[in-house]
Image (cartoon, rainbow, N blue to C red):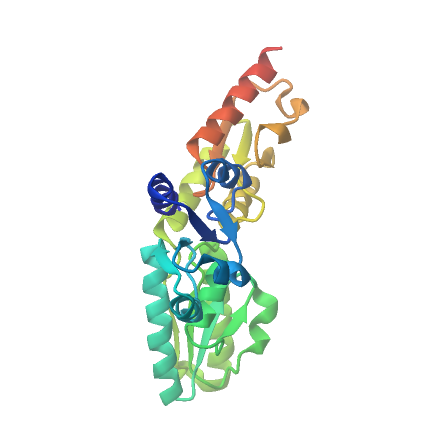
Length: 277
């Protein structure tokens, strides 16, 4: 996310550039970059950007986007996260393997999320998308499975889903069930969750700053809420409520990977002013 923002700012100093979808799932940061000249476009708008630059955000895109850009003469500035690029490659490789043994590629992720669209597009949509435990019945437990996760999902829920799938497969095929689960959750996400759990318990109130469209923010806030019921999610300082801080001496502030530090600073200043009245 940070790299995509840096690249966009560098490109804006040279010329106009558009981003294919919101560059991050944080409306305040998107608005800040729009003020600098960044345009947000959809796939349908690409035809208007012939001989111009279009940024691929950190979430990545399916191969079809690159093909269309090439046909239209659009200059791609690729800011896809290296972790996402690696995952795209691994999914393609697994799909080729599964075709040889009548197996299935399964992806745990949020339906309609940009990263998931990019991942599914690597194999022409020929994967089973599961958004939670309720969807695992879509899997044929008698056939091989290769399980991957969107990089920003909750690692504990991903582990739970993997255990459930393996258990169901072993009931059908015994200990020889052909199941592999890959660790594809971003270390920044996986590593933050246990630290955030500790952080949340150390403070009376937790204010989590994030975009309401961010899967990363939603997953990390859930960690805070479970560790400390007095945890509140805000998009910016406007969402703060004075009663959250009555008789409170200690407030912890955290945010998603897509939350800019300047925005967290704004929230911290607003809390300080609110509690001094």
